[in-house]
Each structure stands twice: as structure tokens, then as C-alpha cells.
Image 1: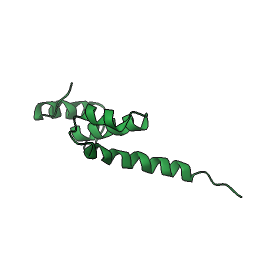
Image 2: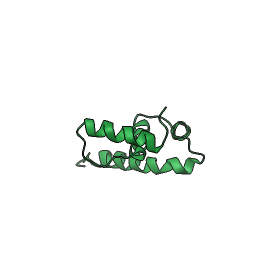
Image 3: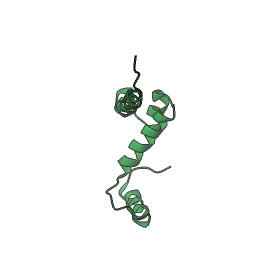
Image 4: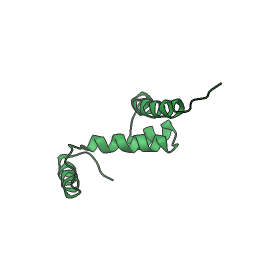
Length: 82
């Protein structure tokens, strides 16, 4: 139930600092990670789009490029000697 606001960002930075993370992480980073993990886990893009509150499916399609690239890299690891 987190929503984007300066108030929540303050707590976010406190949680990140308490975890010993020094990288600059924003609320948007969490949304991006959440969407990517959902797609990697097999959740369909329409559902992910609705969970993120996107009005247009094209907005969510940005995340599928990351998943597609990872799948390509995994498939390219297999070499067949024919």
C-alpha cells in the first residue's frame, strides 16, 4: 500500500540506509524491480500493467524487453555441435 510521496521516500531512504545499502535507490527502482520479477515469474503483462496502475499497456512493455533479453542470453548459452 505504498504510494509515491516525499514522506514515503524519507522512510524508504531510512530502510535502505539501515540495510547498509549505499546505492541511490528510488521508489521507481522498486516498481521497476517488482514489474520485472513479476514478468520473470510468468505473470502476464496485462496483469502486471494493472498492478502498476498503467493506463496504457505500452508503458508496461518496457519491462518485457528486459525479460526478452534475459531469455535470449539464456538460450544463447546452449551450443550444439552438429
